Amino acid sequence: MVKEKKMKRKLLVGIAAAVLFLAGCSKQPSLENAQNVNANQTQTEQTAQTNENATNQNESVSTENANVEEETLGGAKVSAENANQEFAKKLSNIVIYFDFDKYNIRPDQWPKVEKLAELIKSNPSNYTIRIEGNCDEWGTEEYNYALGLKRANSVKNALIKLGVDPKKLTVISYGELNPVCTAHAKWCWRLNRRDNFTYLP
Image (cartoon, rainbow, N blue to C red):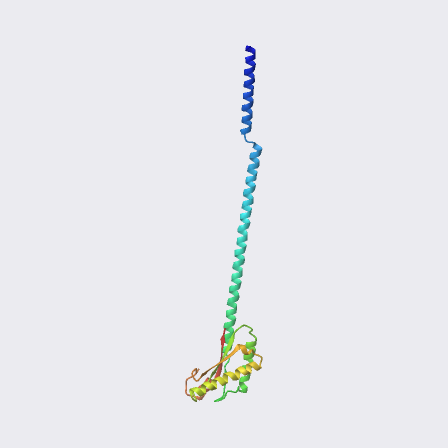
């Protein structure tokens, strides 16, 4: 009887030890699993960093391209403005003179008309040329206004015959109200009998 109790006690102790051992093994983390977790975490971090670097690089390239495009557009705009200013200056330097009380183009003024036509045709941009007819102080204000308009139209018609687009041309008369010289002398009056040309963008 005593012997049987001892055997039962040993059996219970053995079972308890086995249970504790198994419980301890199930709670102890696997070294291999821990290494795999660390490796996966490291790989995830590296992938995230790579993606972030790629995003930053793309943003940098996009910004750089935008800056280059903006500089190019800005440079083109400045270049166009400079070209227009130069064109306007060349136009203003051409002056066509007329005889007293006349509006027909003098033979010595025809080379200027031809030069003006070539200048206008060489610039295909959208713009208008205002032809401004002017007179000396002789005659009434109404008469000189009409004479100035005839002078402006005379040059306009000549330019059209030379191939200038009529849509680029407009006329106005200032009569005697826009003199370049105010002296009461023949040399001064000759300077006031003229057509000027203004660039209108």
